[in-house]
Length: 302
Image 1 (cartoon, helix red, strand yellow):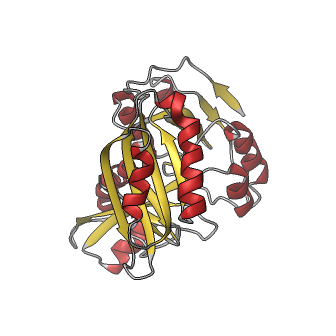
Image 2: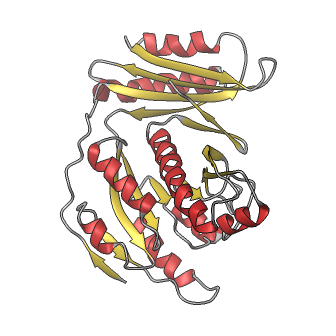
């Protein structure tokens, strides 16, 4: 393993120390929005955004995302968490997560030779378009090292051994990630991750697949799409699970193509879709807009 660790660039984000996001989920029933809001009202919270969803109004699952401000939030956070535990967990039987507005997610990006998704994420982070701090870039090739250095982000080269045994490389990556990141993004990282690796990492992993899943799962989807004569190609951002390319989908998009487009044309045009879809998915995750509902996702727009 080789590494270069330049000084980090400053993160152009507005840190909102009096703002927080509350995520609530559980069995739906009448009055939940009022009861959750009343807990926040007891702390003089000002709700600035609220969105909720029920997958079935009669006995379904309830999901709510609330963004609010509280004066001196950091001083009141422990008391608010205790009130949420008493009222939301004990009385209503719901689960909840309270995320301070000052907490910017630390992200590791894994990439291979293709650089379009990687550089797009680094550029958006530098502009402050995505509320994240890129803690490191890890690649099994050195092709992107020079470009990553321009963003003042640590770059680590962890080669993948030939053959099916990737355990040594995965163990090295786990050491780099452990305790340092809140999210891992696979920006066209062309390696299949083992179930053991997924368990050890212990944080969500987002992948961009260059296909409109569930079509053309696995390798070479643009070639498969050309052979099938499709008129639409797309990209899918999803959470990674032990089942290859079958994790909960966060975002998808498509672009129209014709019979005259070659497989190379499809790949070139698809790269634009991949960038946009992955950027949206990472942004929504970092803004705490995505909640899991079994194998599906609830993605809040407000």
